[in-house]
Length: 125
Image (spheres, rainbow, N blue to C red):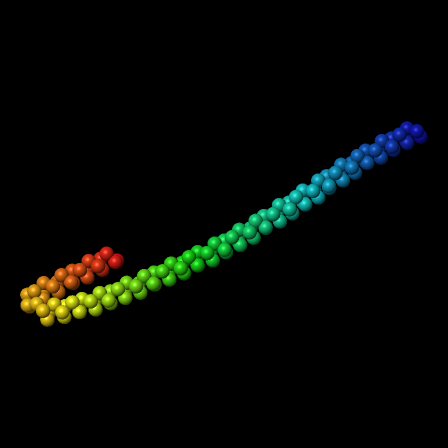
């Protein structure tokens, strides 16, 4: 009977050891799951941060493009105004020259002014 009790105690101790190992394994699984959950949450936060940064970068790029477009529009307007003023000046000079010069001199003067205007356009472009 004592031998049976000793055998029963040995079986119980083995069962206890099996249960302790199972509990330890379960605890490891819980820790692994919590760690995986934390890594997933960290990855989600990083992805969200990257999305916000990409959105901010896109807004900055759009603002830079708008500023560049405005600058180009202003330059085109200035060039148009300068070209218009140059045309007016050219017409005025031609009229003045035609009144005061002979026909041959007037033709040479008109060509010189046209050449100057063409050079100005080339430099402004």
